[in-house]
Every structure is written in C-alpha cells, then in structure tokens.
Image (cartoon, rainbow, N blue to C red):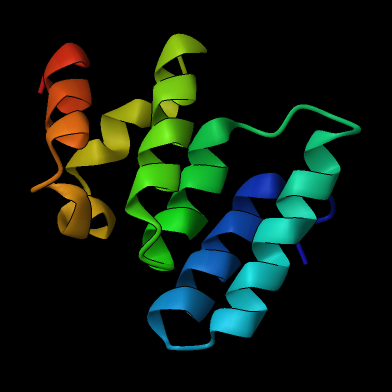
Length: 100
C-alpha cells in the first residue's frame, strides 16, 4: 500500500481499528512489528494502531519510546486520534513532557 512506508500501514491499521475491523487492524500491527525486526519503524506508528484498538497501555508504551527517540510526530499528540488516551495519567505526563 505505501511501498514500505510504515506511516501508511499505521494509518490503515488505525482506520481499520476505529471502523471495528479489529482483525485487519491487528494484521497491520503485526505487519509493523515484523517490519520493525528488519528496519526502523517509528514507535509512534505502532502507538497509533494500538490507540485505535483501544490498547491504551501499549499505545502509551510506544509513545514513550517515540518520545525517547525524539520522534517529530510527537507534535501530533494534539490530534483527535489521541482523544481516548487523554484521561490516562501516563499519556498526560508524556504530553506535558513534550510541552503541551
């Protein structure tokens, strides 16, 4: 779909997840995990699919790694896609650490 672009795969996984297609979303997540064994996959991209699936703790774990990697996509924590995580204390702390 994205020619090896993990961002496209993660967005597809997120859309499948929020559309109720959990199996397809989990397949995209697995695709990202497998790709991560061979090449760099931004943790933010894994976090996005986990967030869509409602796997809050896994999403925050991946976001923590993205923060440590200084991923520029952390500025997107303001996006609506993260709204379901906003009540999570770890997410709130991470958002504060990024300056939001």
